[in-house]
Image 1 (cartoon, rainbow, N blue to C red):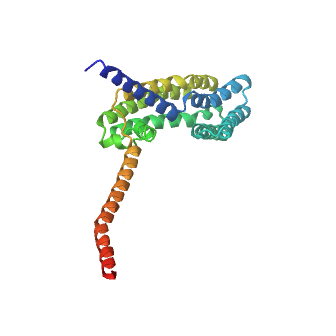
Image 2 (image 1 turned 60 degrees about the vertical axis):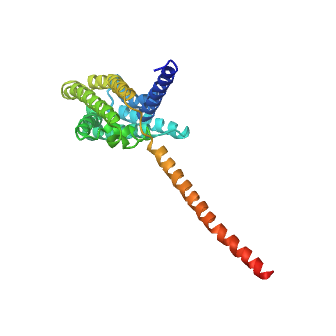
Image 3 (image 1 turned 135 degrees about the vertical axis):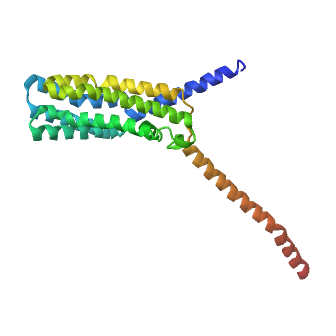
Length: 260
């Protein structure tokens, strides 16, 4: 390796890391997505801790979720993270109101976390890691990593196991608290555990993918194939025209000769 090769390889590695960071930021919502995830639950437990009013806490949490969606719509930004927050809060509100138990506000989210943990692990065991299904379209590789990029599939599998185990550990903490702790204790622990496990899982995903082979851009391949097909058709038409031109010229010349 020459001295000129090293900067090039380092630059490519830096570009790969930057692309990975940008994709993870887009897929998981970044700082704003984390705020939208934490704020409704934080507002609920804060109000309930202050006045023990289930209805006021639930309405405030749902209202702030809707405001976050409206803000996204006004700014013409993606609303998938805000909408997922609204649905999660809405289910929590319904559960809490129907049972008249504030603790049940957290139950749908806890069940979702447990189900997601199992999904990460089961899909990894099945050879179709969930994190790959989530990030494949973001990296413009779709499912090409399954058969054409084994190193990348291995990284997605490791990342999915990491997500599954982290979420299982989180569930192992929260479900006992659901049965034994009061609403305030459960709420504050849940809010505290919103961000750190998420950041750990995202960081591990970044570590695994940063060391993996680059994604195969299947969209670029499709565009290149279309361009090649178009060029081939144009070449065939030109060749066809070139074949007919001599005959046409002879007919024209013959016609002129006969007229003369």
